[in-house]
Length: 253
Ligand code: G3P
Ligand code: CA
Image (cartoon, rainbow, N blue to C red; front, side):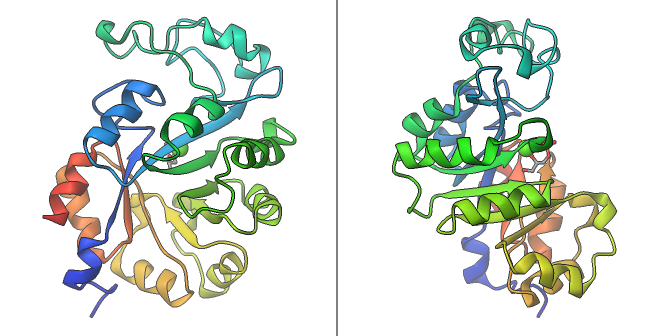
């Protein structure tokens, strides 16, 4: 049997809405998070960076240009300035007026409704971001619950966060350069993290088995077609990080 591919594990596959239900609404906005909740996703995935006044904000790129009507670096603007921008019109004019959410807002509005997968995005640009996220979680008393997972491509940042928040589940993100990840590397990750979440291009049933043998779970990113969802599901993955939560939901039925 490959990858624990039983009926029971299939029903438990985690449906993780990437930047919210970003196939249907502008990524990393309340509209996308509401859509994910409505579509019965298990998690929303959010990207967290810091504003000029050191407040955690939810946006993917380190510049404003692609997803807002602003320009330049996120770190050049205060939260109040970022809040004046339109983060919805680029996707569809019916979403005009969507704002860049703060992490606090997302935790307050969604912390009780849905699980949250927090990506520390480019933490090397934001010294102290791990502490800021830990403070936000403590404020909403989400620090001891199990509905938060923190992940990053920056593995030293994951180590730091895991030290600050030993009760919280953590994960490492792995790009295509981890295609030939060794058992030894996986064991090193498993010393501080519970998830190894790879680019879907390097996912295989062999990788799923290796990650499970190392004692971790695996949720590949980013699923954009039904065929990809089905292929990964057959490998026995634990979760699917997808722009289209309905594709993952269909697999549960
Ligand atoms: O959750 C993993 C995935 O979001 C990583 O890639 O570029 O979409 O943040 P990216
Ligand atoms: Ca992300």
